[in-house]
Image (cartoon, rainbow, N blue to C red; front, side):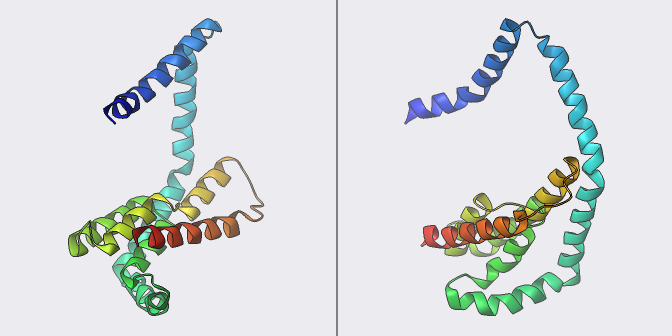
Length: 172
């Protein structure tokens, strides 16, 4: 087991070193290419900033207004029949929009129920196997200038539902 921990500590530095060595062997100015990529990344962040701010504000408004709790109570009555704790409904909804806001809700759940409780375990697994659907779609499709998303939303919702079901099943 300690061998795997040792290897896992070395993976990222080795990959970076491998990329630099490969670039040098191919006679590429690695530093200049890195700077160009960093510059493009910076301008991408500037372009998506309004979307990020809008999503964070929307989640904040939902949470502060009490609408999220209202929606959670409403949906929670239905989910409790299928074995999904109603306390996790707000986390499920918020996770589709903002991972950082969902992390805040997760910490609140940990404080109230504990990390080793069934709710804490389901929430932990769910955070790992679901995606911020609306954030990802808006940012990446806007950046790539995609106008028709076809079945992306439906597929992402199905994948999220599968992740949620898996989290309940795995937490047993």
